[in-house]
Image 1: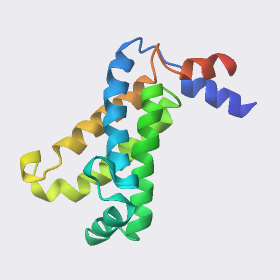
Image 2: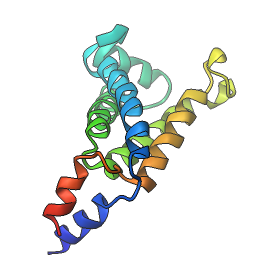
Image 3: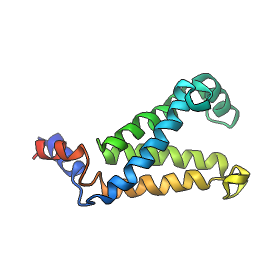
Image 4: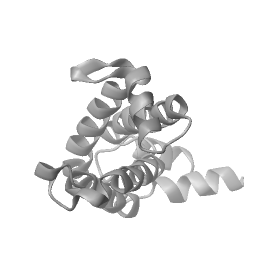
Length: 148
């Protein structure tokens, strides 16, 4: 009974279509970046290369951190596109972006200097989705009705 209540609350959203406008592009960007880490797609380095780089910047064990970050981005991104468990997916993605910022913060804000502006932008967008929920055009609505 408690699970249904949590699911009902977690999938509720009054965001209308605004959440869709935010969810889809953020989800696509996250899924693509996750695919780079996990599979080496889109010019990425795959788990091995990403893991080596993460270890070099202090995220140990690198391979496991690459698997976690890549999975959060890839599967979280797909979930955001679908609006499926939007709040948990966005929360995990927001945390991942917070960790990404720690790598880039020493370079300043601007992306042209390998700064943290891109991670900050994705952090802000995913944090907004944690608060907004999936909105009107989200798979969460099916879960919300089923948990009523």
